[in-house]
View (tube, rainbow, N blue to C red):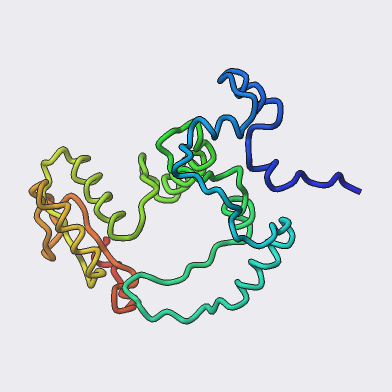
Length: 222
């Protein structure tokens, strides 16, 4: 038999009784009620109990949420344009996305509270660099359009602005082309569908394209 887990509040509310007492003593307060009495004016305090149902236990709350989730329906999406479901391997799903040690409820503005997320991004970037054979790799981009714009910027900066053309081959998603044009304008980068030559900093090849067509780009790449 294993020891029972701590109650929900004890696992998610940091200060315990001793820490709470120490903080109250530092403030010169005798209780939490006394602290609230000096921080929340009586004019805006509710003087009657809230009309709420009896508090549920953690198990009861999970059961209720699970019952609600049964009503969710996963429909087939036909939106296209690159927006589709993806398969996440069970090992990654269980050990990363479902493991709180790898993520926090905070955005990574403060590295000391986002170590798990930052380490996950580091491993992702390392894997992308190894797969592509490139010396650098970016991460944490929201979609294909912003990733394409970031790749364009990396390629342009790599050539130190000496190559000011980006070539688009095939039918890219419209939103990808729009974001590329928006980011290219202030950098004075020309975007066209012409030939690839020494003036081109990068070549974008969709596979499949926005119409779902898988084209053979072997000649173009060679």
